[in-house]
Length: 112
Image 1 (cartoon, rainbow, N blue to C red):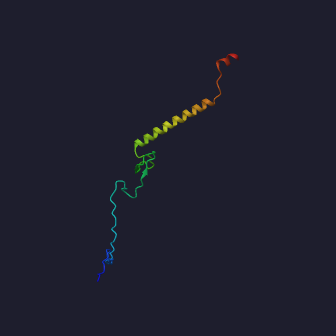
Image 2 (spheres, rainbow, N blue to C red):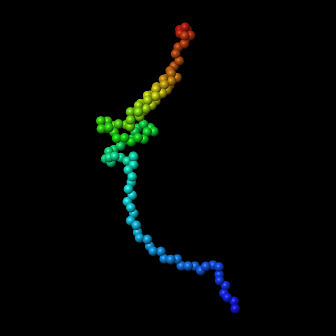
Image 3 (cartoon, one colour):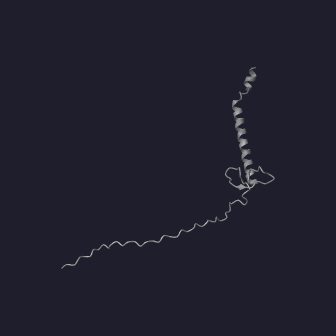
């Protein structure tokens, strides 16, 4: 008689049981020392008041209200403030010149 035909599809095999992994204790991460880290946690750093300069510095004990990180930043800010004052003075002078009444012309003086 005829023999049973074998199918081309393999029979499913049961997966092997996987042993549960042992829990691994997380290691405490050690942060490397970075350049920007404060040397003393108790020391309060200030930021430079010059726009665009984000330098952090420790104020000098002799000048606790120090605003700028270096003399160069202080000088740059001083130049900007002087330039802005000159600009405001020129605007003020131009405004006063426009609003002043016209002065007497030589022809007006002769008619008197």
